[in-house]
Amino acid sequence: MQPTPDPHRRALLLGPLAVAATAAAASATTAAGPSLAWGAAATRKVLRVAFQISETGFDPARISDLYSVTVTAHIFEALYAFDALARPSKIVPLVATALPEVSADFKVWTVHIQPGIYFADDPAFKGQRREMVADDHALAFKRLVDPAYNSPAAESLLGEGIVGLGALRERALKDRQPFDYDAPVPGLRALGRHTLQFTLAEPRPRFLETLAQSAYLGAQAREVVQFYGDRIDAHPVGTGPFVLKQWRRGSMMVLARNPGYRERFFTGEPGADDAEGQAILQRFQGRRLPMVDEVQVAVIEENQPRWLAFLNGQLDGLLGQTGPLPLDYAPLALPGGLIAPHLAKRGIRAIRNRAADCALTYFNMLDPVVGGYTPDKVALRRAIALGMDIGREIRLVRRGQAVVAQSPLLPHTTGYDPGFRSEMGQFDLARARALLDMHGYIDRNGDGLRERPDGGPLEFVQASEPSQISRQFDELTRRNFQALGLPLRIATQQWPENMKAAQAGTLQMWALGDSASAPDGQQSLARCYGPQAGQENLPRFKLPAFDVIYERMLRLPDGPERAALFLQAKRLVVAYMPIKVHVHRISNDLMHPWVLGYRRPVFGAEWWHQVDLDAGLAPGA
Image 1: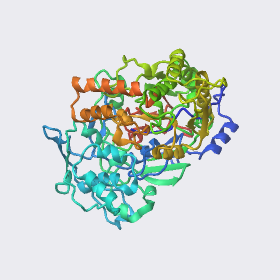
Image 2: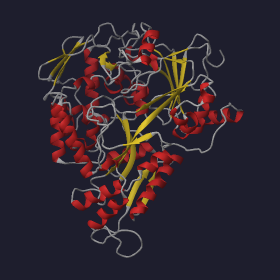
Image 3: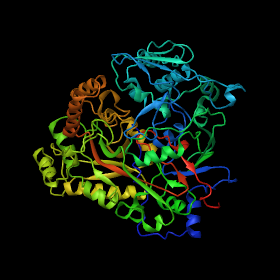
Image 4: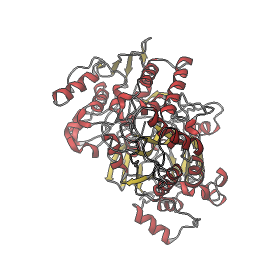
């Protein structure tokens, strides 16, 4: 899972804007971020995109934000990847020669790796060409659980039960010594230069999904780690299609074609009835990857400059999870869900999908006000959730670009049931007030605000960010709390600071987004799995009955028995309400006519290398 700021909490600028480019628009774009030129020569293909939130760095062992993950996924390569065209998603070999050899009990996974794949040239290799070997993939797994890096993904990986990997981490923690990268790990062994074997303590039928996470578990060279030390977040070196050419932190990233990238060609397996996928395959089958020479990424946080940069042709598209169509311009660009005529005349295309994501509010289960498992605390959280007017949120703030969520499970993942209905998706002020009254949260002094059951004062603190659209969400939250007679204070700081505070357990409530990185819906339930408290489990929810279900699901193959456990787990989350899932968002991608072959990945972040640009249609052609 990739915790992210809700990308729709950005500046909301009301009123229509002229489509024609103006000098003022151009200056606004320049002020918000770097102006990205098409390229010095017509033969160079430069893809220009934008991030709406700043990246944090490019060390796979440290990152968790979607923006950094998107960059690293194009530099590093895992053993497997998601087919670019398959719907539903399908995992295929990337640097492996074939799918893994798997034991009947799903405990032993053996992967054979293609020989002759090389890391990008780098000073760390002292002028030598460095072949990727099995140990380089093992290093990525070890770095992720090294306590020195405090990786947000560590507990998730340890949950896969690779024999000996957790013990090595515990030894480093106990002895307060550096992680021993040379110590043998029985469950993570290189059987020669090009074979890697994983041995798991328990059956893990979906371990293949872990092996397809290039952003975190792509091959890494030990020489690079040692050469750059604490500076490694600025020096990512992988075997992928791009290398980091330039980085101005929080402003601009430039990725260039990896000149030593192996011969890899476009392919895919779209369904026979998938007209769009079949058309892309027919056009690009056999083309060498990457198809563009360079990717320029500008960080443009405000919506108006980003929108104008697209209209002016300074961005090739508003694309992907990291920079789609700004929410507040959806009514202008997509009235009724269809591309506006004035944009269609320019050849601009739109793709709309329900994303495998959600927006949610979590409650800190250790907080003395909203935390706890006693009936009165459970009733308080349920009342707050019932009092959230999600329909109003969708209409006024999200501009209709979302649907009400009924559970923590995400669209396109196993366990998600579009027909499931629950209290999670209800807005019922009368019932919410009755719950508060019944459990002693009443107004005793007549000031219009409720007190605790023991008569003490209540205070609720919602963490937020300093953006214009965040303030709109905050006003809606205040309205919801006021309707329940509950006092609310908004505490504002930048998203990275809120994330650090959330991991430290010091926030009472916080709203953020979540997206799936693989098809298995169980990763959504990790939000409430006790052993991952402080990592993916930001609410710090610890319920033994839930944890037993979660652990049993890990061992089971997909089927009716596991589906029944999904239902039980969903119902427990709804009953205890450690998180209130608001919506599943609708993604809107816009692109100019010169962008060819784009298809947003359902899972993963890799697509830059699989699109082409028609330079003859681009500005200045």
